[in-house]
Image (cartoon, rainbow, N blue to C red; front, top):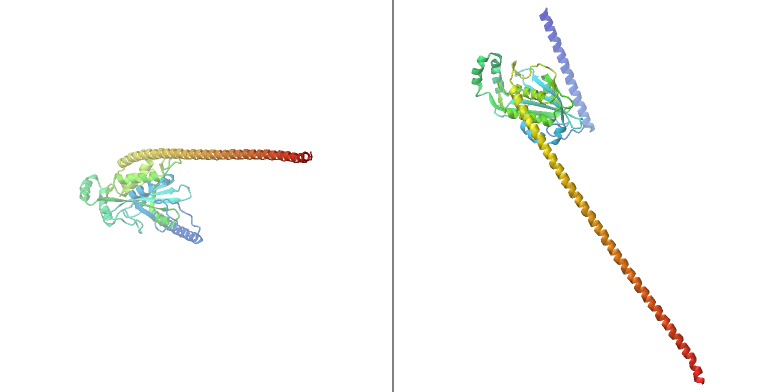
Length: 389
């Protein structure tokens, strides 16, 4: 009876899951339809111009890259990443196969109007062969890795007595360069839907929330992912694989940021075939390296700010000097103009005085001439009287 009830419950759960899947598929199709309609009407919102995080809403494929060039070329050099805040952290485990684990982050834009979906995961490159993680199913490793992982199952499930022998037998084939990948796109975009489909094929086994005053930025998250990749750059089937990477980053975030709390106390994250992968030492190391990098970045930013303030002060002084020089030149120009005006006025005054003097001499000459004419007239009038005598 109990068995029949259990089967009935499983059947009901399966039908609900199918209904949820149909609903999610329908909602995804509706979102794509409305985005297509908005594109036709020219109403597609403009995505933030932050390469390495946000994609255009009409872009079909997500942005994906290896962690190191992604961090060094896109995150570290862009000051805007300090203003992009991590709002949500999820630890995911695939439902079948090697049960690959990865991390999903939601990161808000500086204006809080857009959200980026970012997936961080470790894959076994198998000789650094780059694989497209957006195939129908992105497994933890390539085919050769899956074969080795299957053979490792007894190691994780049996006692310690079998580990040295089997681990030594795999030592020459189970280590290679890790392929740590970043996949990101704008939430609600076509590329973002592809990342959401990847998450729907897995189970969200744990989430991490932060307080408002202590949430990591995209720059800080990039630093942590980069340092974790550099701490163990080699993929090892029995230790430093996807489970180790996801659990190390997840636990380090919980350790480094105040009031960070997982929503589940115990979860199957960081386990290989039911056995927990050791991460305590790696978490301690990566947290120490992160604090050193954070302090160095803080000192670097303080130096940059001090240098910027010095340049601003020098530029302000130079600008003030240029203004003072311009004012001095203007004063000198005005003084020169006033001096020229005064000289011209003095010259006009002298000209007036010369003209007045000339006029005075002309009047004096006229008066002298009048006097002489009068004298002559008097003389001429007196001459006939003298002739009569």
